[in-house]
Image (cartoon, rainbow, N blue to C red; front, side, top):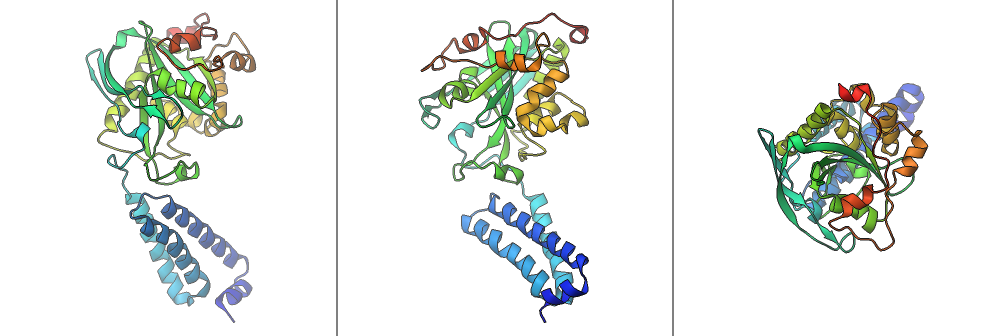
Length: 341
């Protein structure tokens, strides 16, 4: 009689619980190796097949004395590898993530290097361009939240753009930093596959590629927060941009993604970060509305309808893009007591 038959009849439900655990761990380890950044690719692919088969083989077919010792050792080896697998800044990155920004604050003056300003013909055909700029914290006048939908209503990419008194805007998007050798994968974001990347760019690049090139549904909402909160949020972004230059971090779709990072930078309490509308990022704007951060002169469905960026057919981002996309949006409302605090 095989071990499988013996255990299933002798231990009943206990065996099946252990079997389910072995199967789930094998499945997770297979995905973790497959979506890892191990090189060469043959090593990555081989481990994604051999390791889970070894776990399952030991569980179902090896003598009990051997499996009780070997399986915990294999699990420990995997966990140690996964926890010590380091993120890196030096890889062969896809073009849009090749050059990170850096930010230095001296007094009230912010110096930002490598602000991205790509000129797009198509999503993959673009002319790279970067520039440096200086901003004064005293000129920070607004923060707008962007939600961009490419399929359905549940998932959207969420990011912020900071406005200044002279009409300039600086958009900062928290994204996955993808290597050239890998295609984009939503599943990969659950594992050690992407590093965290703060895209720091002109609005005509970061928002324009979504409205005019990819033809996504894009919404812009003004955040009504106190000037001190606005400045603290901006400085938190700048600090993280500088920190990531020497301390790379893994991106994680559940724990460290575009939406949870915004809340982290804003110092939001934990229960807000675990709100279902954060996990389903397409509904993040409704959470901001319920918190009183958006224009409450309208009910939320009306505000959302009014806040969609509408672009003429054939439009392309130009020097007037920031003014054009805001021309008909409901950005103003009377200040409330919470804004004055």
